[in-house]
Image (tube, rainbow, N blue to C red; front, side, top):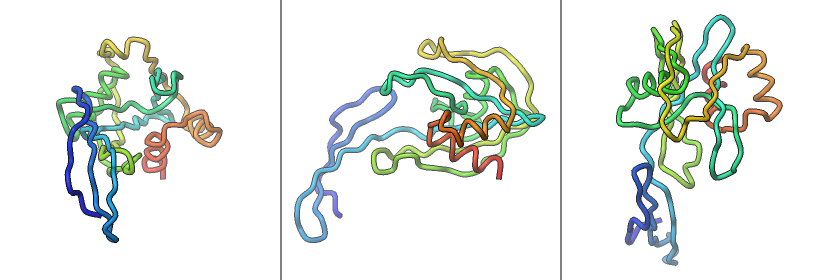
Amino acid sequence: MRVTSSRVVYENPWMRVHEDRTERADGTPGLYGWVEKPPAALIVALEDGHTWLIEQLRHPLRKRFWEFPQGTGAAEGEALARAELAEETGLRAARLECLGRIYYGYGLTDQGVDVWRATGLEAGEQDLEQAEQDLIARRFPMDEVERMVRGGVIQDASSIAAWYLATR
């Protein structure tokens, strides 16, 4: 498939929506819409057989979900992971290990999510953004999180993939 033209049809500080005109291998035209987003960090914080999850409202589904701390920001890489962990949970990590990059929806978006395992945790104050004021951070035993993943309580694809990477 070859892109013959591309335009941004919508843009805000968090994303750009693109519309690409394409030509398939057989010469037929096509149209493809996709979302450009900056890389994200997702953090699995582990200590003493426990981990931390956050629960927050996810607007498109109008429901609250349990997931691992994650987000995008001005920073990248380890700095972004540290910032997101501290912002959403108040935790500071002595050690961060990057476990790899995943793509949760590469048919829809170019956003990659770097998965980090955080250890050597120290408690601190959350620094929530205005849109996160109802966010709940809670420590769970790892076996309970495993049951939440297997039982469909945790439904965030990135969190499920990150759990696998961090615990296997």
